[in-house]
Image (cartoon, rainbow, N blue to C red):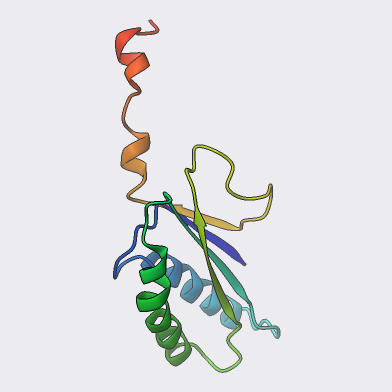
Length: 122
């Protein structure tokens, strides 16, 4: 299962949304009695100024350790990748993601572009 978090930032809550998706999907697989463990690919996206190094050095090991302790035996592997860049352009191949999350980055999308403020279309 491929998961993307757009505008992930770099801090203690960075992997919260992804961990909730992983937990929920794993519980559903268990409930539906799937025999094969589900592997996860998590893509963390933010602008190139994000400190991806500290994210992978500090927060990722704790995230992986907590998941291993919490999940049932036979839990699939979890691969985490940095995907720097603006989500105004293409970041991922077509049809490559199963779940896309965006929370704090939505505030940037909700702002009206200056062009529209100067030249209203009505």
